[in-house]
Amino acid sequence: MSEQPGGTGLVLNEPLLWERGKTGRCGFSLPAQDVPESPLPAELAGEGPDFPDLSETEVVRHYTRLSTWNYGVDSGFYPLGSCTMKYNPKTNERQAGLRGFTAAHPLLPAALSQGALRLMYELERDLAEITGLAAVTLQPAAGAQGELAGMLILHAWQQSRQSVRTKILIPDTAHGTNPASAALCGYAPVAVPSDERGIIPAGVVDSLMDEATAGIMITNPNTLGLFEENIREIARIVHGRGGLVYCDGANMNAVLGVVKPGEIGVDILHLNLHKTFSTPHGGGGPGSGPVAVRRELERFLPVPRVVEEGGAYRLREDCPDSIGRLLAFQGHFGILVRAYAYIRSLGPDGLARVSRLAVLNANYLKERLRGTLPLAFDRPCMHECVFSDRNLQGTGIVTLDIAKRLMDYGYHPPTIYFPLVVPGAIMVEPTETETKEDLDRFVEAIQAIVREARENPDLLKEAPHRCKVTRLDETAAARNPCLIG
Ligand SMILES: *Cc1c(COP(=O)(O)O)cnc(C)c1O
Image (cartoon, rainbow, N blue to C red; front, side, top):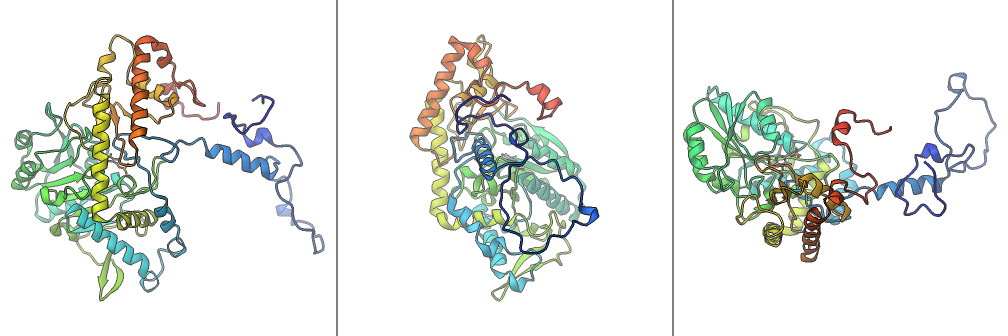
């Protein structure tokens, strides 16, 4: 790479450290030697690794510059639908960084980890209260693993009743992990079509639910941002035919303190602590997907279980009906601390306000953008709303181009082409932590892009223009994932 004259502070192309090094340069100074020199043992002598020689300043600036390249919710609006990319209060990071937590080892005896065990116990109780269910495991490492745990519990319950069932009902709006988790447990997913209102009609469940079907995996609110209004009736039908209702609770940010899934017929539910309960995510992990169940299913939860006896806490392993262990140790503990701090600092009223504001923000965006992009379902929404590119037919512009152009306006693109039932879907989840001004600016950006689509479509076709990496050949990138060319 040829370097231009001038400073490099704002230059966004960063050379590799290997391109920057100068032989003999050094990043540290050792104190003068105060012991006699002695030769290196023969086995350690020879050429060292091929590391570049750099000064401390060069190294610090290199990594500091790279650290600003990552777009996160702390740097701007991140309306990625179904992912709840909300601002996570820094105080929760601080609690998770407390020495007593970070220095605790999972193999410490219970007597020396009472604080950590109590936090887990109380977090389980809080999540049980929030979900309206009886018992919780904090073990699963992500939403998808929570689903797997839930399916294993469902399977163990069916087996305990000598019931052999091979299928599971899954709405056509479901996240891809739902059928994958069910299939891992040997269940054949049966797609349940949503209706013209974007939800599952009870009649369709009635026609599909038979003696070979283990239950239903339903997401509520669903991935269209719509509340499954028929959930009670659906649960009645499924229960009546010997099935269970699994709820994918990844969208719980819409209903905290407003709806308790356990009170509307749900038997098993997973939460995504990294979406709803204050853990930054988006880089691939770690996550946490606790699972809550009805009292009758508690005996199947993974081991170990945190139990309290006379004010002392311990881990219990002797649970003969348990589905077993899903993860080393006690789950992703740092995330549990963040969730605990988040729940305790907001309290029940604060949590309900989170959801009300999340729903208000989504409906505000929906109303302000309704003349600009067509709505997939023109109804009041929950935490997110879904648009499409239908009105741009004839311009040659599709959803992908809008998403790419949004990056030029400084935004992380929304979720696109999901859920699959909406052709050209653009799924926007603003979350509760954005101000009206920020939402207005986003609306103006979308309006400007849709104008550009009509007046200067090439601008969108080639977008992004202002980013470090411009339009990628996504097919080639997927087939040949080589980052150094
Ligand atoms: C995010 C999400 C999942 C999967 O959760 P992970 O933590 O990413 O494994 C499942 N269902 C829905 C609806 C989601 O939004």
